[in-house]
Image (cartoon, one colour):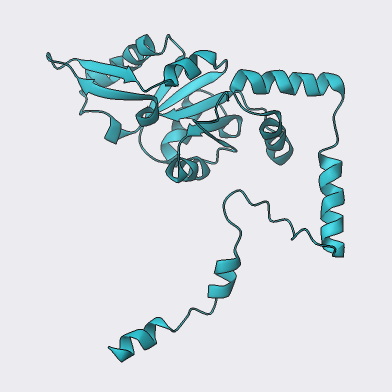
Amino acid sequence: MGDRFDRLSVRHANVEALLRRPGIGHNNGPTFDMSWEAWVWRRASAKVWKTPKPEVAMMRLKRAERLGITYKELASVIMDSGAHMSAAVMPLSLAARVRRGPNREIIIEPRNSVADLVAKFRGRLFILGDIDAVPALSETERADFLATLNRAFDGKVEAIGWGHDGPAIRTMLKANALPHQEAFMVGAGMSHRVLAETAGLPLTKDIESWFA
């Protein structure tokens, strides 16, 4: 027994660096202290966040309101990548429950208030048809699924992609001539945040704060 615990006490040479590694969302800035590096960082940050011209600020604010995100989230993406977001990607499992009716027909039931949030959205909406959320579909059912989905969401969904990972999102967006930098994820929890990062999306918006 003793040797087992001895082995557990042996730590990898890089463990300290790994433990200190910033988490998701950290911009790798220095600790906010009184050092020279911190002062330079604060000065650069203030310069970046300098209020733009009123017409530019108003244009960004209106776009953020249409997308259901904050002005600061929109501005951060513009500063980080130069991309102007215009679309959202939402996993089907978050948007709706899919089941079969008594005659084996596909029934789509929007979850809670998601349909109300989608109704407020004034951008391009894409749904990722994560396979686990959908009963086994025939090719005909899969081809007709978008029309069925849009009956539940009032025609707001532009396209649906099939898969459960980042490449599936990239493929869907590319097929619809949309750069992935211009779309953000509407999700819930760490799994959707990781999914967005693997697809290279610049922002993940939690469903609880979407249009809050």
